[in-house]
Image 1 (cartoon, rainbow, N blue to C red):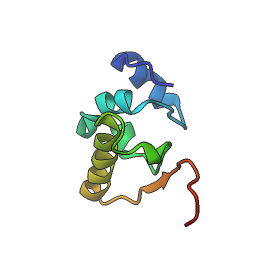
Image 2 (image 1 turned 180 degrees about the vertical axis):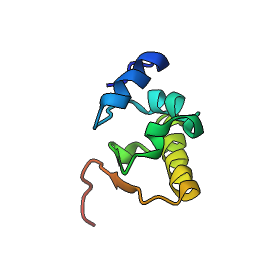
Image 3 (image 1 turned 90 degrees about the vertical axis):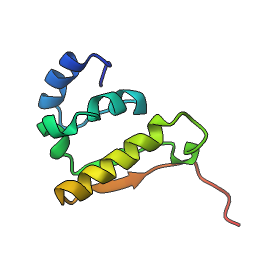
Length: 90
C-alpha cells in the first residue's frame, strides 16, 4: 500500500506485484512516469468506485486519463477494469 512518501513508496513498489493506493497518491506518484520504470510495466489497472466519477475530486479522472495516455504513448497493452456499485436495470 502506498503511503504518500515517494522514496518509501518507490522501494515498496519495486518489490510488489499488486499496488493498492488512493487516486491522490497515485496521481502524485505517476506524474513522473517517464522516470519510473515500474509504471511502464503495469499491465492491469483496476479502478474501484467508477460510479463516483465526476462527484469526487479531479484526482480520480486525472489518474485514468494519465494511465490511458501512458498506454497510448508507449504502445503497450494495458487492460482497464472499472468496478462500481450495481445500478438498477432500467
